[in-house]
Length: 198
Image 1 (cartoon, rainbow, N blue to C red):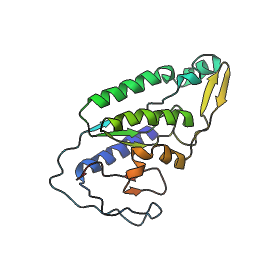
Image 2: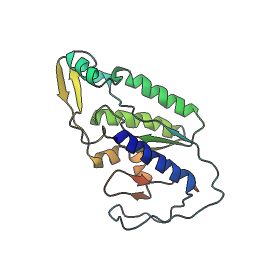
Image 3: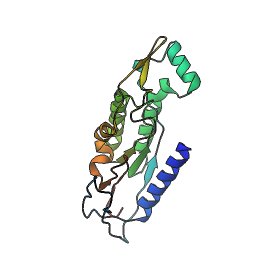
Image 4: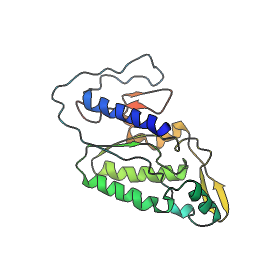
């Protein structure tokens, strides 16, 4: 149900990006929900090419990918944790080579919201920005305040620090939050204008 809801939200956001031309008029206070951001329609907005990838579930393999605890975790939740570095790098490389202006990353960036893994994911996303792509991130259900944040050591599941909503916005400040023209005070949702006219 949550995946379906997230897909619908992403489709709505993408539709708004494509259909509504916006020009930043003023930044709306994130604490005010009764103010709507100001936009103006533009008829010559041009094109905006968007790439999307989600559910990276990145896990730094140096945190442990062997032993009974790892085997038990992957038996009940078959993510490709040991391969997540290679998978994420291949995705980044492909997006760098593609003719896209914007990359949307709609959540589940890390295995279970580990601070360490979020910091590494942010460094991967920086490769996209360095290649001239705008990156916009929102969290998924695995990314914030996750009680399952952990690493694996032999037969032990070792708890790791997770992150708060505020820390998520700080870590990913360069990937949407820092350029938002409006941020919803009750979630990590925001509105941004990735290119003049959009």
